[in-house]
Length: 326
Ligand SMILES: C[S@@+](CC[C@H](N)C(=O)[O-])C[C@H]1O[C@@H](n2cnc3c(N)ncnc32)[C@H](O)[C@@H]1O
Image 1 (spheres, rainbow, N blue to C red):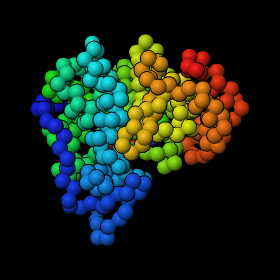
Image 2 (image 1 turned 45 degrees about the vertical axis):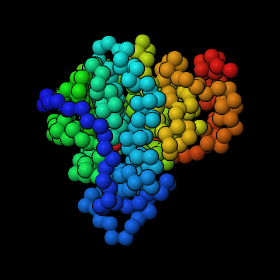
Image 3 (image 1 turned 180 degrees about the horizontal axis):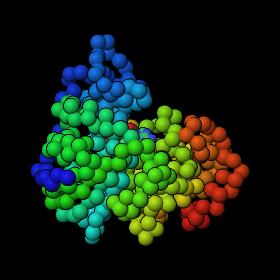
């Protein structure tokens, strides 16, 4: 395991002038003649920022506003991460679900590097390919500056410790299918480092339609059960769909309206305590969910849309959140 130091640097806008395709808000518009040597591709968003696109999954990472702007809005500012770290004593545990091209993780590290603290960053993904691809295009993507060495060590040994400005970082990577890891198959979740419950979860899978296995009720129920009720933990994610919010509520989370990201006027913030949520979903939202044609959580990794079943509607109405808010 390597110990190294990262000097303070700001994320630069990448020069995406070469080897890109242009991406419209909803989907990529291919430009003739663009080649890629991998299952991933560099794309240029409408605002000129570069991002990564998975050709197999047909999805662009951080579409519209780009990797750094989205991660700053969704995680750093919404979670008031700097304030939380300034007040925190001891290790602060961040779970990064869907490491991908590491934009979320690096944005969090860069935005907090002047705060003297200890961060345990625990990343999960079933492939390192997007990260390896992104590192080969670090200049165009623009957000890797200074973190290339720790990332190479993370790829090589799955763990790296380094000094990030004033903070100590212990970063580990868990390679595998996240739902399987969470279900504890083969004792995977018994690892001593995973025993520390997270304070924050950056949840960034592909969309439910493309990646249903990452959005099921059993997955979020197991995730909720891993939390420590005495350790406040927040989970922001980019979707605002009724089905996701019902899933999080039935899994045990409190759920609120999340900040806009530029792409979406509203996202979702879940937590194991109402204190971390500024705008909890209220009874009007509950009534709309009761009428929605797309609200029943997925119990299997198969995308489907259905109104709430009577049992789910009953459980939802009994959720403590709706006793606490009008
Ligand atoms: C939208 S990308 C994440 C982007 C990333 N957070 C970033 O900042 O660059 C979604 C990621 O989820 C990962 N993923 C999808 N399904 C998974 C699964 N079943 N287990 C683990 N990782 C998964 C994909 O490999 C992909 O890297």
